[in-house]
Length: 331
Image 1: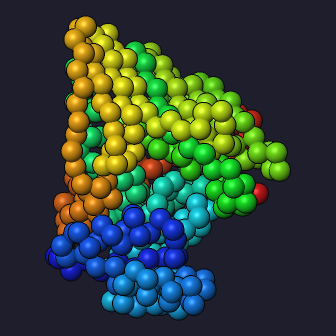
Image 2 (image 1 turned 30 degrees about the horizontal axis):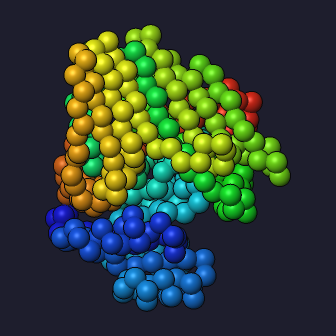
Image 3 (image 1 turned 45 degrees about the vertical axis):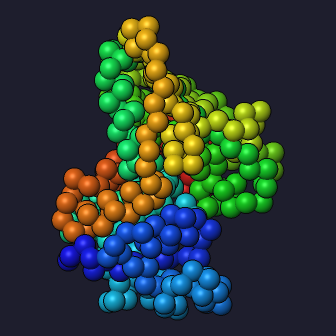
């Protein structure tokens, strides 16, 4: 397939879809959002009319089977990702799946195995990873010498406890929502793949299986330590940050997740301080360009593969266990 022929269908009239796919598609040549399906056809029709999507399809199965579509975008609740990811792969559709990839690592492994046995591109939508800031952070970490400490945080207030992100049946929780960014960034910037040393959670009163906040202590294979902090409701109302301390200095980045809106990058190396800005388009545009390139045959463009997702979900599972909570997706 030529990249200029990529036609995507959206599973669900989700709130994230306009920012994550529809507006970026308008900026990326040759990519078209061609159809949408939702559980409620009237809702899908209203969504299509509002966002200029030409076709409404009767249901998720029908959209995935549609021969006029090349790829599927899944912005559904976490607990539905595995089912529809497997269906899309089986139908030969390329897949852009919102994070977290699945409810748990076992599900992620199932999807990754299906992806490996198929010619389709499967990408987890960690959009921040495709912005130039992500690569610049990695370059700066190399300046710091031996890494001793990595700290990442993704905290924001969501006091609406009826939100689906607080529902255990849909694989909710702070670590699954905001926290997956912080876990992924800790993997990106650290010296090797970390393991969970300890985790502590603040729980939702109406459902103590749900974490409204969590702190995870990590250990890297080099002996370096790490900490992931995440919350949807805690004393830390807003914090989106990455910090790396090395033998020669440190790097602190504010708002690594959406740097096009605002970010601050401060570096100290050998006692010399500096600040940097990394200009760029919205993270979602970079992600969609990378997805189109991977579909077109450049597998190196896919930086957030299904195999990468398995590693992130393994840390998330281990953190839930360490905090004494059930894994998402368990009955």
